[in-house]
Length: 373
Image 1 (cartoon, helix red, strand yellow):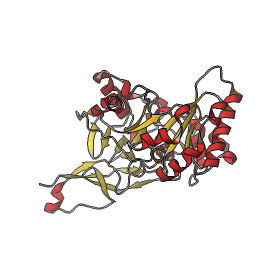
Image 2: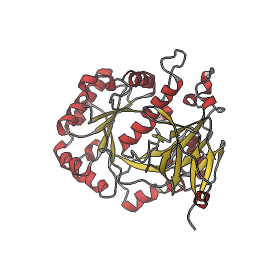
Image 3: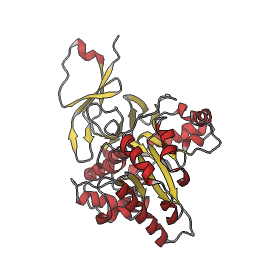
Image 4: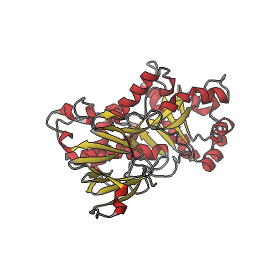
């Protein structure tokens, strides 16, 4: 017997650049058709369950970038509740950063990662590498096991000069990996030193043609210094409002910024765009651009034919009402997404969780070089 598909009718699809009225057809966890039409009563159509999404926005699921590694949570109940909090805010996939220690063998590494066997969401592994280990041989070991994204924390400007960039060049060119850089959160590190670290890092990655994600509050706004392909910026919470306004001013422009939904802060006291425009900007910054930066687009971060059916259902009446607290940007308990679907299955419906522990898959062979943001 064929698996029953699903058609979502009457909803308003929100993309990174606009909205449209269309029905979504889902089969085997994938979006197979997007069109506005009417089902005829034939036996074939009995294979599709019809979902009424009238007066709802349909958004691509957000990609979570947790600040703290979730695999370190040992209590299953705490882990599941953490996952549910992500789902409540519309996240349908996540990135977790694995921090290996030198004593860990390969079986130990696999053991440390077993907590995500309970994951409700699809997940991607990134690896944190010490600056001393940032060379071709060390990265090749991880690449051979399917990893393509590496995080490094810089403590001072001198550390960058110790990196063996020439050993990374061929590896990055052939394997299409990406480096995520952040400056150590040290109160004794002066503002001038942080700026110097950023400048040296950007110059080095531009020279060696290495794509990198940089967490910085102001670097993204120095347009003349940034490479439009190699440099991607993760916007911290304090500048997400400024970033969304910049995206709005250059609606069809290319600007390499991304931010997870939990970091977005918007001042809605002064209107500078329509509510639906703001929703499109939110999808662009926190779903589409994040998926491109980590190499999951268009499988994630889009509602298009062939993409995973990761869909957030948001009632139109709950989006940006007169009360600021009723927006999902502030995670009001009363006005979160009504339902969330992952890979064509309900994980949260009518504000109730569906018991699907362990449904999430580990996504490998990501392609962080595939798309310009």
